[in-house]
Amino acid sequence: MFEASVRMVEAHAGDRAMSDDSGDSEDEDADAMVRRERRQAKAEAARRRGGEAAASGSSPGSSRRRSTARDMSAADATSALARKGVTLDARPFGTFVRALSLRDVPVPREKKLPWCMRIIEELYDERYKREQELVAEEDRTGAPLVKKDRPFPLSVVEFVKKRYGLPAIIDQNCIDLLFNTVRKRRAVVDCELFARFLEEHYSEDELLFFLYVRSIAQKVLGNVSFRTMWSELGRAGSGVSKPRLDVRQCSHIARIVFASESDPHYLSFMANVKDAAAAAGSLDVGDVLRLAMEDYHDTVAGDDDEDGFGEADDGRDAARTDQLVAEADRDFEGRRRAGGAGRTEEAADAAASDERRTLLERLSATLQQTNEEYVEQLLDQVDGLDDEAAEEMRGQLVDVLAEAVDGILMQAINDTERGTKAVSADVNPIGARFYDVLGRAGDGSSDEEVADRIQALCSVVIDSHEVGVAMEPAVKLLMEASGSADDEADDE
Image 1 (tube, one colour):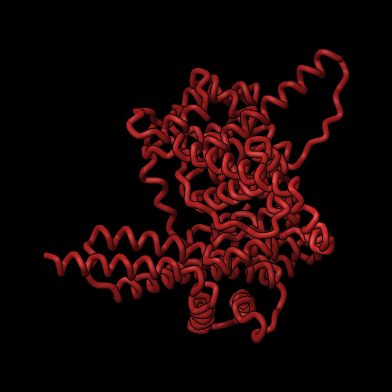
Image 2: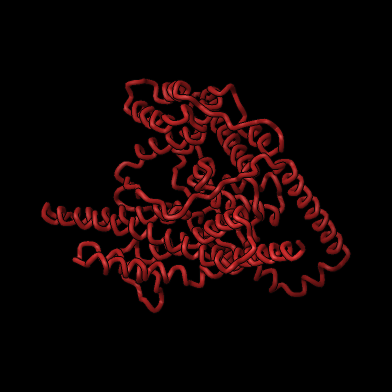
């Protein structure tokens, strides 16, 4: 599986204030919302009993319109959020969004990492408990049970429904979970893994493997509760830190999972663990689980991963543009192999593939440089910020811009079928330029011509309406920060 050697954007800074008291207070806020919704529901019921229901019943067409309204798709949700100034590409999470039956998409709230992880770990615990109960039932009856597995995204929505029960709170918390998971996935491996399950990049079988390895890791760490751990991490001054696994502990886990030290999967997994742990001598639990999942996924995916993409894979890793362009390259190669080219053609195709890969890496590097130059131009227009404030603001601007550019480029990749289909420059200028860039592979274009086409694509992206909409709130915040700094200077 091809992995691009460059990253287009810098990773999120993560949650620097992980020790903030973000745990119980946010749960209390959600409980307060539930109580308020219930009071409103009771009041509405009382009004209906008092006769107001008859008045509303005089226009049955309104209820019919509500019942037949089309549920919001992931693409609709993405567009609706963009109109509200929120950059979130929900398209890779189609099953999850459709399960919400949205009529309007709520504006997501920024949450701390412990809030996300408490929900995620509790979801994992509940799913694994259900699987254990099924195994126990099979042992008791002596007959295999017919499982009716629901896709993991539906399980997530059902979990939130059981917790809150009220549609408005369910929608809000599900969108909050999606938004914060996507924003944190680059910097936090735990969020990256959850996002891959939520977008169905990993299958149900792979989910069970993950839960099994996770349960073994918990036992090796002394039956630690990851959910409780994140609750403690959300409390200021708790003194709790995330557990780490050394190479010996990882070997113990691998022996249980793979049964034999001579198993090729054991050898592959341990080689990756030793490489990853070489510097620090130990690994975060999330990194160990990621390594196990990547090895297992490569095993079960087989040739399917090489020959093309299923619907669930089309938009995966939306916040990681380097992987998206790598997928474009891989899909192009799969289509070519499916054509049954002869040896001579295969040699020519291999050379063209190398050129495409180089083009994609150059595009990633140029996009990153364009992003950084754009942010620097914004900061140059602001006076009065000290170095620390400017650096923090730079990080925020880069994050917002990177997500916007990621979404735009993913749309271009999808619209051009990963660079294999031409589109109209009048209707889709970004897609047309993306197709033009990839078309330079093997056509004899000079280095200068290629650079000009890549720069043209980057310029159209950075000048797009979508980038303007995404950056507007951040730029407003920047100007407000500048004004505050000027006021403080005047006071002095």
